[in-house]
Image (tube, rainbow, N blue to C red; front, side, top):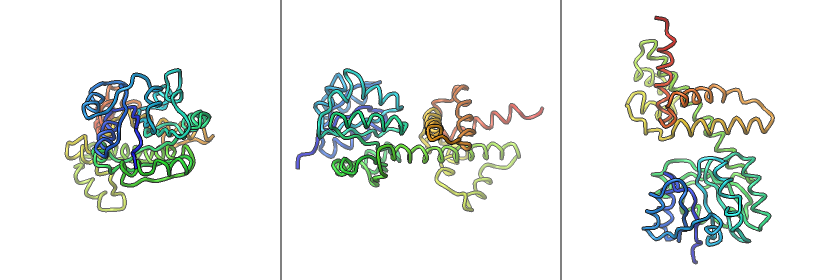
Amino acid sequence: MTKPTIGFIGLGLMGDAMVQRLQAQGYALNVIANRSRVNVDSAIARGATEFRTSRALAQASDIIMLCMDTSASVEARMRGADGVIGGLSEGKTVIDFGTSLPASTRALGAEVAAVGAGYMDAPLGRTPAHAVDGLLNIMGAGDREVFDLVKSVLDDLGENVFHLGPLGAGHTVKLINNFFGMTVANSMAEAFAMADLASVKRQTLYDVMAAGPLHSGMMDFVKGYAVDGNPDALAFAIKNARKDVGYYATMADDAGVPSLMSQGTKQALSIAMTQGRADQMVSQMVDFFADMFASKKPR
């Protein structure tokens, strides 16, 4: 069978890795420049076709994939005279692989359905390195018929491909997942800083905690920097963590309930950003807490 033509918007670290994987699997790719040309030019050198507007890209593609940073970015690409929606027709499918607000996802889904196309949210787990090898975790959501239509393509990108329910369920699960992960990471970062304050070696703290039920992959990621000095064990920037935890809190607000547990995490990440740490990795929040404790300690 002929493989569908893919239109891809958002060739950042993850998007570029996904495009490499799709091209290696024999898909024809249409691309558009967003913030940088480097990865777009590389995709073109491998055979991709460049388009100047999202509308034209959508017209020339069977499946349009977005891998962008915020809901606002997705909305900007989807709407307007030159947006994706303007280039859609019956039978086409749009997939948002980023981490967006569920309410925004559902609103865009209604607009896409109005022109006869399908819309899915399918946020991702794992890293760009996994993406190159087709080993992502994909949290798909939307109409089952739409999911089934693109399932073979998702299988080429992911090792674990889930259908979680109606449109917005994927982003809901991803935000819950990231809220939990970032709360654990910040708690572990503070724990290491508290050990410093108490003159307990970080390795000793880790050895004790890791021997019990608290041991987790996230603990190991933070330890990777706090003890081993490798910030890239958890290659997720503080600014992205703050965005996701903020989206989680907004999702709670939209549901009419308070999110108590997200407040401390959100505050810590927000303060860290005001200190110029936005582009540091989440594991480096250890330094944030250590510096804060040092500044507050009585002299």
